[in-house]
Image (tube, rainbow, N blue to C red):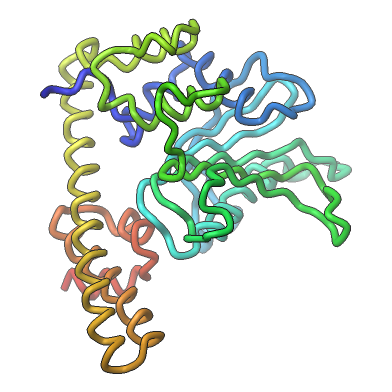
Length: 300
């Protein structure tokens, strides 16, 4: 059956829904309900450049999916992450520093007062398995002191682990539930469910109709969709193979060593398959956590 709606996990689908000026009311509504304790609801925002260059040439640059600023000056990084990364939280923190540094202008007197920076990450994976938090799908990280008090409210990182969101259409209780249901299930739906009658959801289903794309947009989307499914298939296969290899080595060399070697082999298997799909080194680094040197060696 041919899909009717865009897959929000593709770069094209995500930016079509959240990254276009004519659709910024969708992003505003999503952010206001994801972060209900904002000082005041977002009424307007402006999209900012997504590529941030370091202050020194030898340092790494950062490329965001979306970067926007509200009328109050608060900055929001909003991104979709498809593949699990070994140091995801560190990467998220690193990216958060760019809109912080951007607030100081060289050569100008500044008292170091900062506007707030929010990093919002929609994840197509679980950061780490935890029996204690197996049903917690929104992680909200802030800087706190030893008394569990917020020490500085200017940096906040929110991670939404989409695989943990398992509510069906009849179990949706809040507006945010509806948002997450739409993002997770839209590509598989034939029509907008009757439970999603709010104007904002009517619009998102209209925006996401594949049949409304022009030929150029359609071709770009189909190419991205193919890469998305290829990446998923490669990761699924590599994880299964690595688990089996890890079990075998675990029986021979000890469970801990087997698991560690299995994880390494899993990353290598994923990287080799992504190389065969002509995926860029930067994307493979994000997907596997391997170094650029490791990946370059596999390409030789």
